Amino acid sequence: MKKTYILMAAVLITTLSYAGGYRVALQGQKQLAMGHTGVAVINSAESVFFNPGGLSFLEKKITISAGVSPVFANISFQNSQFGWSTEADNPVATPFNIYAAYKINDWMSAGIGVYTPYGSGVEYPQNWEGSHLVNKIELASIYIQPTFSFKITDKLSIGGGPIFAIGNVNFNRNIDRSTTNVAGERANVTIDDSGVTAWGYSLGLAFRPTDKLTLGLTYKSEMKMKAKDGEAEFRNIPGTAPGNYENVTFNATLPLPAELAVGASYMINNKWLVAFDYNRVYWDAYESLDVYFSNGTASHNPRNYKNASVYRFGLQYIASERFTLRGGYYYDESPVQTGYFAPETPRNDSNNFTGGLTFNISERFAIDAAFLFIHFDEVDASYDHYQENGQNVPFGGTYKNNAFVPSLGVSYGF
Image (cartoon, rainbow, N blue to C red; front, side, top):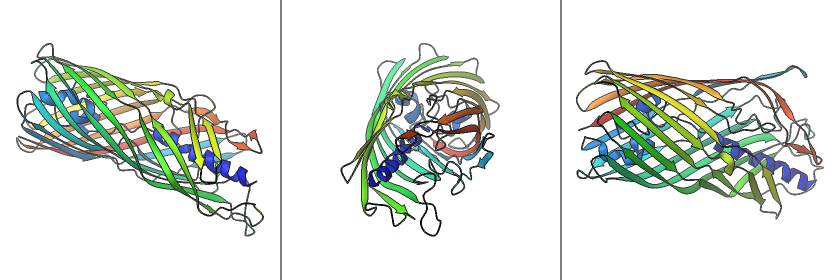
């Protein structure tokens, strides 16, 4: 029985991989307004994230930008067969970004970025029908990326740098579908870990064959988040349950996938610019997540994610010296395959609509505003790999999700 409870905890921990799969495309207000295109759009220090190779094409000596993008998400779940209906009460997540770039000379620039590509929160009513999979999850991560960019010729530049990631996670669920203590309270467990770190790198190339056309290519490496000696706190465990639930820790390695992006932008005239990005995310790194406990047991959990693509379109219009207007759209494919759709990150294919503007207060200082509306396709799906007594117990229904993200930033340059 003790092993059964520990394996339940193992399944719980695997939800970290779903959280890692919840990629947040909110790494810059200017680029977010244009469908989050930016591989071939060089207009600010946001290039530290979108294309390190483009930094050396920036004209200003110093450029700085910063912003925040609060996420308001809605998730509703329904299973008409059993009469289940639930809406998640999601806390507001606050992804942020800070970038700075410095032009050292005509052929070399340096920059640094601090941003949060992974960060989400989902909270269902306690003891809801899917509480054996999740009650609550909070995930936060911060990436720190120093960058250098070099101009090879007047038309070609390269850049890159290491990425250091640090993250925290807190997750709660009931240990199964029915166990209670003598007071009738559902047995549950909370997994908590902080200071999880990983190293990776980013590379980029920018090519300007003409004054109007820019082409870009970037690659971000796979990263492995290593949770070590994380805490597992069990509550309301019945006194008849065998084993010791005190001071149990775990180790796990959570892969974050590599990503390749290519893009193009074209200046139609002095006012209009159009951009396109294609992202390929190599989610097949999630074949399995292996979890090792301090009591010597281990759990191997297949994930079977598939690689997925994102197609982005952006448009910019310089209305006046004061105002620049932007709009965009992107289609984001889900990496989750049939039978692996869990309520921790109920993420299906999505249509994403963006817009925004820059208001130039002075030659040096500007305010950037943007918004993003995410509409996930309604889906009838299930998670089929939760086990009780050695048997798979599927859980599924109809999910309807959307999210609204207003975004505000400031930029400074001279």
